[in-house]
Figure (tube, rainbow, N blue to C red):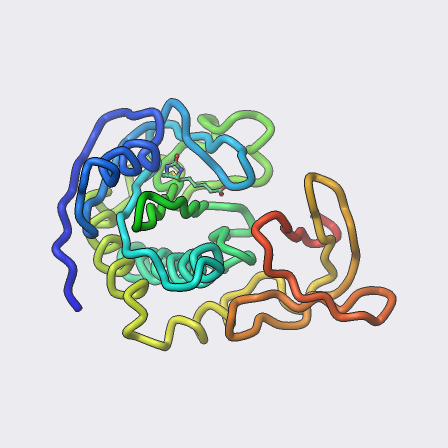
Length: 243
Ligand code: BTN
């Protein structure tokens, strides 16, 4: 089903997710999109903040709420990861990986984060892509782990082209009509096959090898004790053992 897309573009907001959640409360329809060039209070996963200087694409999409609440945090954000990866390839001709659950990785560093939040009977899917953000604009503590697609705007395709293509890909991929996204998601994993640490509330709670991602986008980790753990909660994350 085709969704009509309605863009609202801002120079700066606190958080495009916050703005769109408020618009949803006021009755905005699915297809409403909030795009900003900077955020003063960007929200990240697990209650963190998201650094949002000039040069990034900060954008939130209003989507129908999936029937099962679990699919909101996994399937939808995994689909969004595939939509971002596809857009980066189509518009920029660059190849990215996906670090479970939904960080987009370019040249070994995070180039995009995704955060889904409930809004009335809908979902706000927020995406932050470091597009032409100069490396020097990131806070010092992020410079080793975050990067941009382009270090400066000279070689970059126009940001508006990227945003339009991203919106198309998000509404097509997240509508679930094209089932190929799951294979793309699995084959783009930067984690499977690696030794990982399982992190909960900031603490390492287990070590093992990431062995596969299943059809529900859950990550299977074979622990050092030989037991398999299936990771499916938004409170758990993984990092490569030498990261
Ligand atoms: C993460 O990696 O922790 C998720 C980051 C999500 C950031 C995006 S930027 C657009 C939208 N608005 C926000 O406040 N957050 C999301």
